[in-house]
Image (cartoon, rainbow, N blue to C red):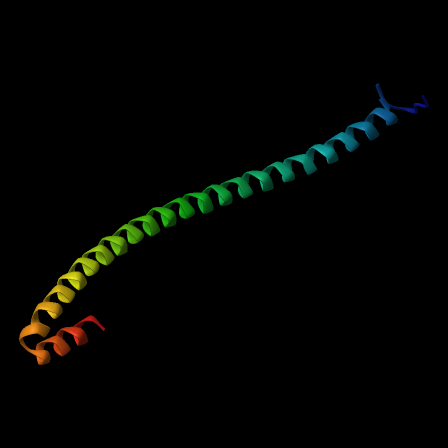
Length: 103
């Protein structure tokens, strides 16, 4: 291995080691920037994940609400059909009125 030493007063500098230290310092700086970027990406992903969890929860609640409303409508519609059938025997105009309520 080739080394070059420079004397400056009482100090002796090994230029190969200085060059190696600069190389490692540059690499370390790049790794630090990459780590900061990874951390910021992790924070952004965590925020997005929590927002998606919240949205999923809201959609599940909304789905349950609409299912409940749909079940109630089905109960009301079946009672209207029963009313329509009984009223058609008595009066045909009531039957038409109830039929229009369904649609």
